[in-house]
Image 1 (tube, rainbow, N blue to C red):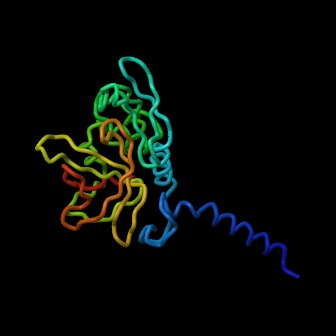
Image 2: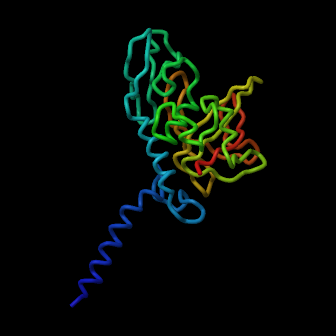
Image 3: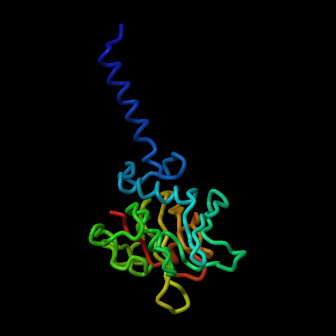
Length: 225
């Protein structure tokens, strides 16, 4: 006859494993290539960031057109459109993430995924960079891994930073939601792309150019923690 105490311990351990399991993968299939090199799962902070970024693709977000509020259109599992291009309002930037102020909002979107708040205060969330709405300020996050000097593979929850190739001070950021540690490829969710859209992208790794995005130069990654 088996020991009921041992059976109970085994049952609790199995249940705990089921709960912990999804933390290991963060938006990818549970393959060893997707696990952090140390073999552990994501922290609760990182997992929450990934969950918010992924959920942003399927939620209908508010945007404004001529003072009227509308809801976004979920075009696919990888694309959520916060505009009505047939009304010639493409890329007007009047979206909930930036308080409808008309400014580029990729940094605002990243700040939302880190905090669960729209336009969060940096005094309340000091991990955020000052003026996080400007993509290049994400390079000021403590511990920023500047490319090409630092080629550490990003972990889900980190924010990738690019600068525009046109010589301007502008650029773009995207939130990493999964990483293949064998190939160093990453999948991101990004705001303010192709007009006013939230989209999912996958980037291959180049030891020379990092994560290549058309018209931009990869600068590095802001660590979530």
